[in-house]
Length: 112
Image (cartoon, rainbow, N blue to C red; front, top):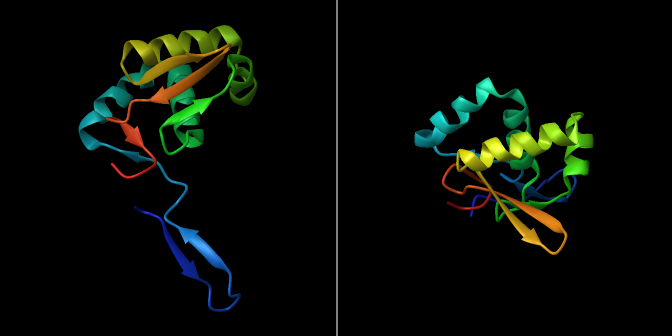
């Protein structure tokens, strides 16, 4: 595990360090570099990677994504299609919600 708990000796507060980061495999960076030609897909990928849980997933509506990224819902829809086509993202239906899962062979938040 990459997280550690340390005691701040000045305040006595216990802090978790080495959390709040996303790791990327070097040999998959080409997948991400290809997104530079589609700024909306890159922006969506980075937002999802930032907010995903330790299982590389997040449940969020396309409406919420469009608000968070300040783009139209259709832009989100197209960006999701690009990420799915490039095998960077998988979308799993859960009732009426979508679960967006980043390919763990590209990026992850927990141990590899």
